[in-house]
Length: 219
Image (tube, rainbow, N blue to C red):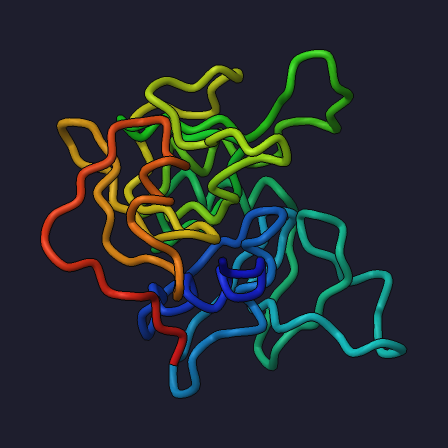
């Protein structure tokens, strides 16, 4: 199975030259450390930053520079800092080419739940609802199964929804999957050493497997 860092590395391969990319809280923030060489990309954080760099080395943190998840970050030459109104104006005007989000659950028709677990304290929904309503392209970085061994890829989400029919691709510790327009998770790649049978057992929603399924590559 892939680690969180390896999930981030695989998602980084979805980034194209010239993209403006928003990184959500959790695994998506790790993508900043794995931008492919030779790729010119601008990372956006909805708390008001364009030009986010990788995480700082220990001892070099600046407490005034944080991402939307309140983690210390770095900025790149040419970066800019602005208020949240301008940041959400960029998002709502669809200026962001790719949005990478974490998720608690995703359904087989592309619904996402990633902002609230009933009965548990949450700090707020953040920018997730604006992002899923406005993004041109969304990739989800998530765990395939929860700590109890239960699937998080479901026929229907059980948690409060963030967005409906908005997710196109998912990368987990087990696999890379597309969500088909008619509904269903289509298996594209599998983690090294992980069998198709295990992915089927770990996916509660409808899983479509066609032909040979290659292993995920990070190089």
